[in-house]
Structures are given as C-alpha cells and as structure tokens.
Image 1 (cartoon, one colour):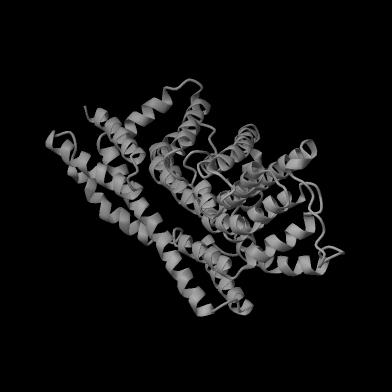
Image 2: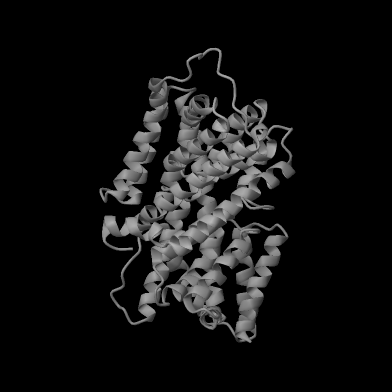
Amino acid sequence: MAELFAILLVLAICIALFAGYPVAFTLGGVSLAFAAFGSLLDIFSFGFLGALPQRIFGVMTSEVLLAIPLFIFMGVMLERSRIAEELLETIGRAFGTLRGGLGISVVLVGALLAASTGIVGATAATMGLIVLPAMLRHGYDPRLASGIVAASATLAQIVPPSTVLVILGDALNNAFQAAQLSKGVFAPATVTVSDLFAGALVPGLLLVALYVAYVAAVAAVAPKAAPAIPPDPALPDGVSAGKLMAVLVAPLLLIIAVLGSILAGIATPTEAASVGAAGATLLAALRGEGTFGEALVQTAMKTAQMTSMIFLILIGATLFGLVFRGFGGDDLVHRALSDLPGGASGAIVAVMVAMFLLGFVMDAFEIIFVIVPIVGPVLLAMPGVDPVWLGILMALNLQTSYIHPPLGPTLFFLRGVAPPSITTRHIYVGIVPFVAIQLAALAVLWFVPGLATALPRALYGGG
C-alpha cells in the first residue's frame, strides 16, 4: 500500500507539472499533501519530515553550493560588460568570409562564453540579439541559424565551469557516499565538483567539434544555407591578429583564473568562483560601459533571483525525497533497477531514458534535485560504475533537456529575442540535428568512458 502511494506521488507531481504549476511549489505542496493523507491512513510517519530543517540547514551552509551564486554573478556581470557582444562581432568578422564561417564562429564564441560564464539564459539572449539578425541578413537558412545559436548557447551546461556541474557534483557525491555506506564502507571516498569539471572538459570539447563539423558539412552540401559573407568595407584586409587577440584576452584570462586554478588544484570551485566574480566586476569597471553602479545593482538583483529559484527548487525536492522514502519508494526503485536485464548497463540505460523523457517537462536543476538522490545510490552501488563517468553521462543527457522541443528553456530564451521572421517552427526544426549530435556524443561517451575519466585520474589520481 505504501509503495503504491510512492508511485501515485510521482504521477501526481508529473500531472501538476504538465498542468503548468511551478516546480518548487509542486514538489513541496504535493509531497506534503501525500504525507498528510498517508499519515491518516497510518502508512506514513511524520517523523521522516523531522529531518527537513537539518537538510535545509545543510544546503544553505554548503561551501560547495556557495559557488552557484558566485558563478551566476560572474556570468551576469560579463553580460553587462558587453564582452560577449565584442567577441561575437569580432570573431564573426574574422571567420565570416568563409562558407559557413559565421556559423562556426558562433559555435566557437558559444564555447568561450560557456567556459567564462556558465549561464545559459544570458548567453542565449545575447547571441540571439546580436548574431541571429546578422546570420539572417547574410542569407543563412532560418532553421540552421536558430539551431546553431540555441545549441551553442547551451554549451554552458556541459563546458566547465557550469552551475549544472556544481549541483550535480554535490548530489552525486552524496549518492556516492550513501552507496559506499550501504556496502559497509564507513570511510567513503568522495567525488568532487573538480572531478566533474575535469571529466566534462574533453566531452565538452568533443561536442564543440561535432557542432563545427555539422555546420561545415551543411555549408559544403547546401552552400545557400550557410553562405560566406562579403568582407566589411571598413575592414578591407579583414580583422587583424592584434584586434582578435585584444578581444580574446579578457575571457581567456578569466578562463585561466577560474577553470585553470580548479584543474590545477590551486583553488576549490567556490574559491575560484569568487575570483571569477571579482574579475568580472573589475573588467566591467575598467571597460566603463554605461553606469557601473547601475550594472552592479542589476547584476546583484538578477543573481539573487536566479539563486533563490534554484534553492527553492532544492528545498521542494528535499521534501519530496523525504516523503518518497517514507513511502518506501527508494526500496521500490532499488528493486526495479536491480531486476532489469543487463545488470548495471541496463539500469543506467533505463535511468538515461527516464532523464531524457523528463526533460520534456523539467529542466536540468529539477531533474538533478529529484532523480539523482533516488537513483544515484542504487547505480553507484553496482559493480563497475565509475561516479565521474556516470556524472558526465548525466550531464550530457541533461543538456538535451535545455534544447529538445517542445519545452527546452533555451528555445524559449531564443524565441523571446529572435526577429519576427524567426518562427517557433524554425527553432524547433533547426534544433533537432543538434539534439541528435548530443545523443551521438552520449553514445561515444558510453563506449569510450576514458573521455570522462582519463583527465581526472591524471590530475587527481582518482575518478
């Protein structure tokens, strides 16, 4: 009876989400209602909810999760400093005279912005406002242009430093320790956010290379879809190497300061995020674009809004997890995954498919908060499952939740800033090949796990 309520709880939440109710309030409200009803039927003990204040206190005082508002602040401040705009304009001119060059430059800039901001919404809006009209003006197919911009903006979810990787690293570490404790290991090893950053680097670069290859292939097969653009009359000799390096200096220095210090073991992700936030603020002040004080206030407000949203979802997901466990849902999941054919591989495939499908109604943060604490301990307790490899598999899979139709958040960000000539259909059709590319990258990582595990082992001797 109790396990039936666990299933009904999940179904009720899915129905509420499909109906359009806010995720944080749905998770908390529906879970609390089921807890009250289960208590009346004497199949749920409110003692489980006694752990909620302690869990919330642990979340709010977590040094790892402190990196989230700092990375968000860094990304928003970089957007306000107009560094992204200058990058897009300069690199677009440098490569645009090649067939498909403008599209390739968008992918490369997307990768640079991902490695220096880690914020999808800001990147999608900036690229949509600046690059999309230029691509249309120079004859790019609207579907291809929309797909390139949306996919490139979403690289911020897999290329470190990424807020998704920070949250996933914290959730995966808790699951990894729970898995070891269940096997009688009372001095459990850990998986850190730094491990995931190192593990995501090569798969992230692979994804960038696949995007570039696709754009180049389209330009070769269908030249009219991705034409070369005529040289700028004001720059008859093209963009000079000096000008190109000048616009690259700021983001490259920030990448080295933040990501380099993490990978080198000099700083923790939280310490590096604080350096990045301070560096982005300094760059904005030195550039003198607009009123710095106003930009600082707007950045602080946006950071507070995004951080509050993330942590409110986390609190709702924590309440859901306690009620789900109180109904015996974790035992139900353990039995279901253990009984699947194929052992660990079959269980991981089932979880990957479920996460992909959940991406239609939930974003990456919500899926991490809800799913990873439930399935993570079960999967990591199975023989031969490397936590870093599993984490990067999940991260690549979660990235698709940002771009696959019909509810990918990046598609909505882009639709909000796209020119009137770009329709929703253009965006949806254009993104499909990039979703297929991500699934292909996921398959490559499945068969070549060393892409995710080799660098963490080389740097830290673990993973």
